[in-house]
Image 1 (cartoon, rainbow, N blue to C red):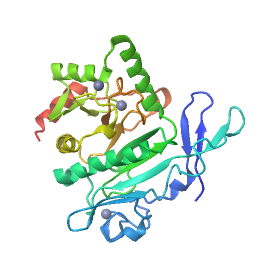
Image 2: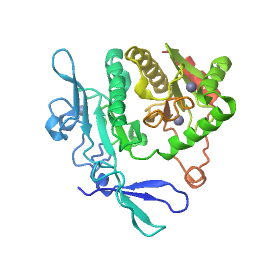
Image 3: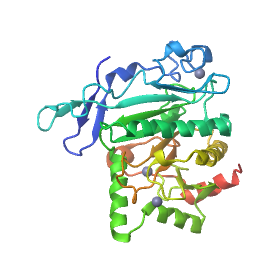
Image 4: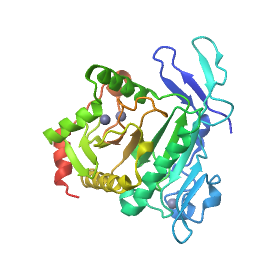
Length: 333
Ligand SMILES: [Zn+2]
Ligand SMILES: [Zn+2]
Ligand SMILES: [Zn+2]
């Protein structure tokens, strides 16, 4: 397996992982795939097929001693923990390259061949949410890593290559662009207003109610004011918390209930539902603990990204977030 490259675009500063090995990964949606892994008998994530995956980094056992959640290294990693995070940059001043340092894990979220988190019990999903926390805590203790992104691709349009319910975690020695942009905006707001911009925002959303989708315990879900795709929904703790690593054990159940409620409601509106769920949490350590506020961004893949999105970074959303939220509220639980 060759190590991927981390390249930085000399004009925009955009970071790109050149990871050719990943092209060989299984894709159970391609009709040309030799082994259709939508058939559980060929699925490497199903119970009984553990030998088809790299050795587990962590297995959470139920009371009968069977694994319930399994964390494994990604067999087709985009980044690898080889060498050091400060590996030498080579190439020219403009066209420089570095080995793509980092860690890439898969969290298999059920031994059963299920496809969405709505098929888990609340207790099972709570366990999964606590495993996310524990993996972030694990990587936060690694001094070579600065941030980890946890994400889930569900459905063909969202880029899922295996149907079996799972998430991925990518730990990196740098803060990704989407997070650093948010951090900067949050810091600017905090410097000027002395408050967390997310706390202010969710208070406004609670007062206005028109974009609210659901509330459970200390968590709230609303359609993003400037959502990039129809039904883009954010889920946040209502009490300020910068790092997902801070999640308390007893917060997992209400968060699980809200996540399931949001996805169920989306399933009534979008069939079949494809989405990306991405956790945005502050960089490891104390950094930004007053100004940043962790959240999930759930982006249903309702439209193809086209010229204006790719070429200019301007999104066209064909459904107002207010109407989307109303449809989701009317969809019931
Ligand atoms: Zn499976
Ligand atoms: Zn806050
Ligand atoms: Zn965000």
